[in-house]
Length: 530
Image 1 (cartoon, rainbow, N blue to C red):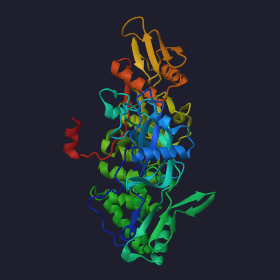
Image 2: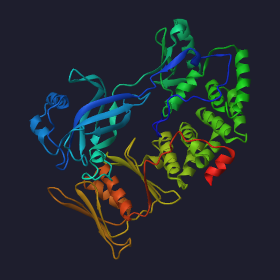
Image 3: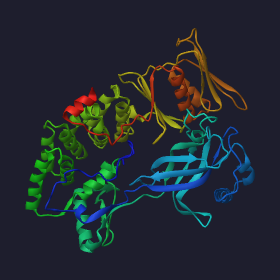
Image 4: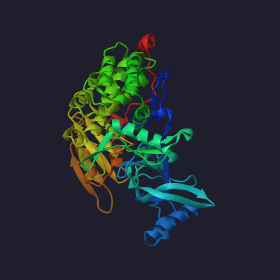
């Protein structure tokens, strides 16, 4: 679920569900708002280098013509007929808990019968996104939930002659902005609906979770009716909505002090058993008091890695420093738990967690390095080390003075950014590279395979512009931006440089930890590492 990493399952079911005599919210209610909402629109991409088309008559073309007329576009038919424009289908998926003002990725593609050959270098015009359906041979739209615009990132490796399918689809990274927040909540089971129960559940949640609005402390739950309790996402779980909902559903809403003590003792025992440790840790996290923290801390000292991880993960969401060492070790050594460990560390407000993540920036694993950096930016977006430089509003540029092998990382999802791990990145000469359709990177050295000499970055248009820079990757990127290059242009240059051998540094795109990996134990674990 977290936007930090690749999407996970919204509802994780655990083997060996611990039994309890206390009434939990999960026994009487189920979650609302955990699905993704699909938004669509018909729009236009401009700025193409003659690779567009005049679309054939269709409901989509009619919809686009209506939108252009609504916006008072002069000569809409002439604009649409230009080979430098293309009718495109825009699609996005709003994640659970997303709030007004949050940004998200937008997918752009041509229709199946389009004659457009490439969207490279294109720019998506401002687009209103809503739920959409075709009814009665007409495009019907719902309420507008987001706006989108920006440069289209097409796979730089796609050749428009050989890979038409790749060249005619792309993404606008963080190009969408939500205009209407998505609600989260709980729906009481049909046979348990009552105002009294709704109020009781709301009170139980508010005793455990609260937030501050305009400086005032308030609970996150609002009972709306006898069947619905509205929830505000707690800030600590902003990047892990599914965990937030699981924790809420594992809250007890009706138990005596004696029952609570008995449940605590039971969970303390179940935490130490690998088959029940995941759910036991989650329920101790839901309890959230001093005794629950003490029980979880015991789990950090057992031999079984699975138990240690689940205990540390729960402690991290309770902002306990004791979790940092275990989670940092897990990120280094166990790919199956890497996503969860990084997300947990990023949720903490503890300086030790930040320092632990920083130690991971110099390791060999590309997904560990970038995953740690992404977690740091979520934890402290305004920190001078992670803030980076705004490259004319098109992407963020980071140069990290860290140990480890030189690596350059770019993204094709979430947000446009280039991250240099290490400060010494050179391009080897000679080279000739494309940076989009209008910028050429040309370098001649003193001899083949050398990194001496200079590089000329030229922009071809109505008036040719040129910059002469060193072989430093940073200088070349800055020259491309100065000449009007976009983020897709920079990524294309880096990919071509790596493919041609001109870039000796490691280059990765979207090196993020993946969920769903199997955790192997004992001899299977040892054998897999061999």
